[in-house]
Length: 79
Image (cartoon, rainbow, N blue to C red; front, side, top):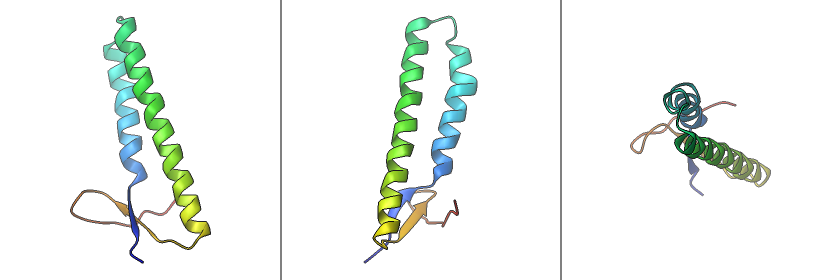
C-alpha cells in the first residue's frame, strides 16, 4: 500500500502564527472581523488535531504516512 500523503505540520503552524501574530493585530479594533479570525484559528487547530488522530490511527494499523511540503514533492517530518 502506498503511503498516505498528509500536509506537514509546519503548514498549520505557519498559518496559525500569521493569524495570531499579525492578522489579529490588524483587526483588533474590528470585533466582527476579529471574531472571524478567531474562528479560522479554531478551525485550523481542530484540523491539526484531526490530522494527528488520523496519524495515530495509521500508526496503530501500520499504514505509512508521507508528509508533504508541496503538491509536487514529498518530505518526511519527524515528530
